[in-house]
Length: 590
Image (cartoon, rainbow, N blue to C red; front, side, top):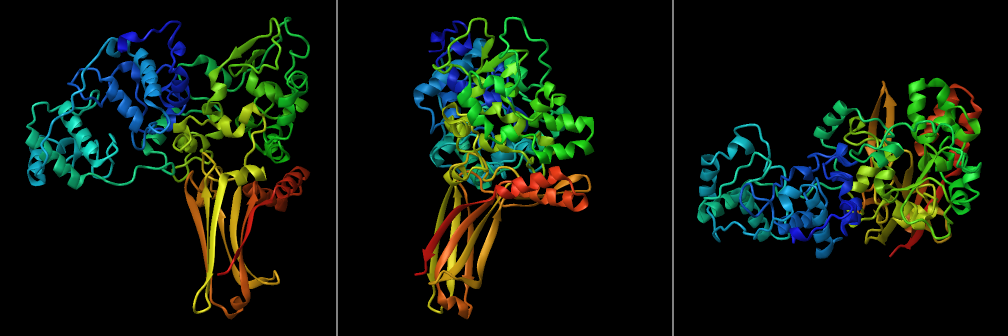
């Protein structure tokens, strides 16, 4: 089957490229070298396919893996490092992705065909004998406890996961017999099947059986230290080997220069007003978004007290175009059309143009798949690993999505925030979008002794990242008791804040609490009252109130307390006006 691969005009022409591009390139890169845009936040680092070294095989040392070996890794993933794609990709799609991977190290994989051969071991093993073999074969030299541990089996779950305990035992046997190519683990091909079974039995007594790291896991210290050395700038696309993608956000956007004479006057403009002449629908959608308001009064009020370097850093996401520094009307357009689509007067956009657009001769256009991938959003929605506070940067949205349930199913940021290519980018400021992201359960009951107890649970069922994802918004879930006249029972109220509370003090950020809800998880609020007044209670009301700019409300108030500034006052007024009630339900007491 390897030999059937025909590269034709390049790897991007293969049937599996679209799947690889969306689901594999974020970590492994467009060239398969492990330098994808997500790599700076990952530990261990993504595998470099160009080296042709694959740790997990069911063939001898130095022999390339079988297609089944690669398919198994794709299907089950690597806990804490690589998602399991088995729920999203069928056998045919996985096979096509393997065709793509093979092109990155053709001398190793293409044209090779091996027969799969699992390691054999006896049905029963002696754990006590396995402990002796563990020492005799030198396993402790790498796995401890007598030396620094390279792979701590007692705390790190099996990296080669399987669907059942029996399959896990087979994976352990394969690792021992065949070793890990490219790693320090040698193969023990001549080990006796009884001894192998005993080693597996011993490993079962010491290895971790804990739950795999979830999307709530903090960034590994290894990745933080690596980023401190690399010093990747905020607002920058960090992938490697992809010059077209790097041109978009690989650095601060360079000045466009003089427009070529081939452009019509409307085309030789960076103003949204001119873009709207041909892209009226997109411009209308954009005009009401947070993107169009990114140079808000609250942002502009801070600029006078900042250094030129700090202003440039903030502007990279709030007013990205170089021309916006000196052009006040253009700066007011904030994240405007040209900020995402124009470089050196060449338009960049997604593949497959809308049929409503009539091609224009001589119109410079580059179509790039990054416009349909989540890493397009990464530069402005993900801070570097070295800026982590309690293990997570204050902007960690891309990484939350990467480890959440959506990425491994191919769902990108654009699917939810730009459905049908709409330029609305609706998020926490939009009540309907927030409501679509939650599910609320509530029960209320009166006990035999007259006590009233209420439980409410809110699930993050729709957001592919934490809810909410940044420290700026906050939501409050509240339980309150009412009588049959609709009057609140005094003292019968409980509330909990949903959000990440932070404070800037002594030159550094500090986290006070983090009660955000990861994708697929929930937060519970419970209340119980036995006061005599609750005897009149007939209903428990559950509400969720959202303040999309909660952090900045406090920030603006602090600034206004020190000095009356009309820009800060306008910013505070706008923030207060964004409050809304996202959920209300009255639950009868049973």
